Amino acid sequence: MQRIKTLVSWGEVLEQSHKKPCLVLKFSLTCISSISALKEFKALATELPKYLVIIQKERDVSNAIERDLQVKHESPQLLILQDGKGIWQATHYKIKRPLLTEGLRMYVK
Image (cartoon, rainbow, N blue to C red):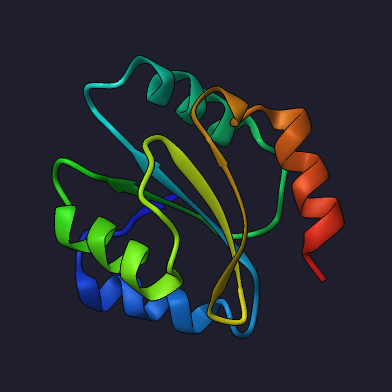
């Protein structure tokens, strides 16, 4: 798992999603449900690249994700990116491995 710390890195991740889908978790340092989401995200068995955005430290990246994907900001928020778009998301306590696995199975081509 890599952190997305800059707008340039975010642009690279978005561009990469045209070649290979990836997962992005927006994480809050002050949110209890974020801790649970991070554990689930780390334990998720997938070969897809995983990225983490800490919203308190990378607010500009979090805002760019919302703007570029036209997805309302939530925290925690897990997004599947493919072809430069957010194709699926889960938020808060819905970020659980069985649901994530199902989302990957149904939406990632």
